[in-house]
Image (cartoon, rainbow, N blue to C red; front, side, top):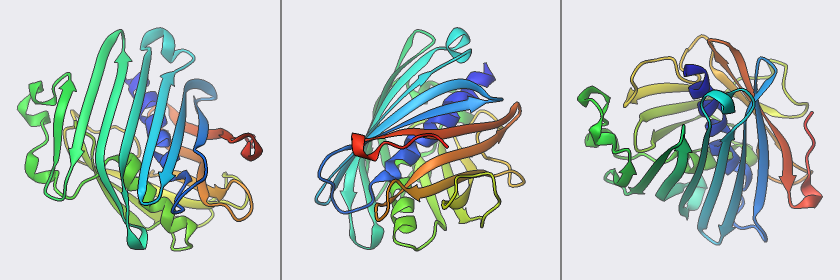
Length: 266
């Protein structure tokens, strides 16, 4: 069901973007962000992410689940964790990423280890190498890649430091290899007040069965808005929009914890 795949991709994007919520060197307590996703005004999924930063180390945990009509036809849940190291000048180095989930009653699992030479899938169910040869990701294109949550953390650090969001993230998620390019979009309207608006475009490199995923059309890139949860705090993603064959998918921040940082949906 392609509709369900769109829902999963849209919300998974925002769980990755939720990793952007804590670009400062350390935080006293974990932050949890909660999101809701809509298509044609109907709820399709929900997501949350918890960010922990201790010294030069980071850990992000994201959770997804289908909602609304999607739960009737293609129910799914997913948990993802990324961990790595924060460096100087905004550098973010992924070391490990894993996912566990259930899609239509079938268990799914993925464990990745990153290094400067290449990313290696240490275990996976189903095995990505069991796919047709044309859908497999060659090892030579995984060099210099990261997972989406770790890569997007670097973008948020740029935004929070006033350096804009121009960046290209080389992503390998164990099954797909793509570039996520971010750029300043100016204020095109339609987003939250006092937020920085950025465009993003996905360039598919390998592992895709066919085009038609999230924000792959140069004529209709996705948009994301960042703003501080409170004066003086780092910027966080508060809204994401991306065009689909069925209309615009919208993902909005509905709550930010701890309680004194609660954010209501605009």
